[in-house]
Amino acid sequence: MKYSIDLISDMVPALKLSDTGGKALTLMEVFKVSHLPVVDRQQFLGLVSETNVLDMNDPDVLISDYKLDMDGTFIGKDVPAFEVLSLASDKNLSVITVADLNRRYLGAIPVSDLLLSFVKDSSLHMQGGIIVLEVNIKDYSLSHIAQIVESNDAKVLNSYVLPIPDSSQVEVVVKVNTDDLTSILQTFNRYSYLVTNVYNATNQMDDILDDRYDQLMKFLDL
Image (cartoon, rainbow, N blue to C red):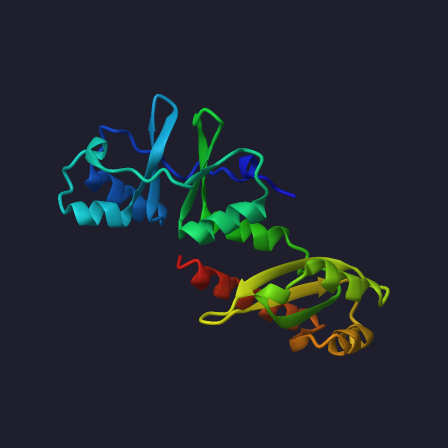
């Protein structure tokens, strides 16, 4: 499992208080992000967003004159990658800052890099099958899903959840270590799970991976 300290990128510059909003916009465009951390003497002061700069309507205004966003915009160095992604989604951030308990700046994680790392390191390309379920978020239980898979002499290799817009439902993508999904599907049906898709061929797995990655990118609005 990767943690936040492992995901820090050298490709996200930090702004100084003496920088201008115009410089911030230029760096955001170059590095394909919409947020940048502000650091003074190694202390993380907060984030500046593209919206902040545009609302100021003056590219010459210094970063020191901006109201910086500190609430929930940084994490510690030992946070699991899934929690980093969850924070980015909750706060609609393109960059997550990593800092210690004293807010000493350690680096930043572009969410686009995080997503690529998540896909690359996942087990979705390993031999096996993929089952896509649709469940109500209140009924979602990964432990129960894993129990169903394991009751059929298989193992869950990976799973992740995508919200379905404008509904209380979520889509659960489950990768298992077998191509023969018949008995697993029968058990899911017996427990009234709605199975929306099944994939057990390599080209189909590539398609589902690409499709779910695109959906996740859209969901995070990157």
